[in-house]
Image (tube, one colour):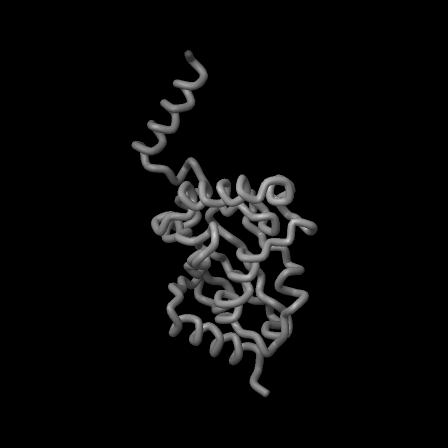
Amino acid sequence: MSSPSKRREMDLMKLMMSDYKVEMINDGMQEFYVEFHGPKDSPYQGGVWRIRVELPDAYPYKSPSIGFINKIYHPNVDETSGSVCLDVINQTWSPMFDLVNVFEVFLPQLLLYPNPSDPLNGEAAALMMRDRNGYDQRVKEYCERYAKPEDAGAAPEEKSSDEELSEDESASSDEEVVGKVDP
């Protein structure tokens, strides 16, 4: 049996050789971003997300940690942090799975078959149970607003801090706030 570090290397190489765009964080092989496209024939179709993946030291015996960097509207994804409900992956995880399975099976299944009875986003779960068409419409709005290809390609630092904004962006956001406060 190969060591966890060799397995991590092999799985990462396999993911990079597939059709997924992978961007390493730091020098190690434990943290990276992957560009993920919403499944066809779903309200997420056309959406592109930047997914942060963290591999635990015990990988592949312990499942990877997965989080959406750009916003997604889904009952099992925390809207603020982007964390994916760990039970979804942990319950079915086995060392037989690899990183390609995460992006070809686990995440598409998560988006296609949300579980509103175990939500991280209570509002999304309630809307899904109450009004499926309204839920699908909200998902599509989030895709159009937050999950365009350019949203998935931006480094999270560029999106998360006012200090990182250019002067033009900073000025326009200040003007918008001032415009709303002063009628």
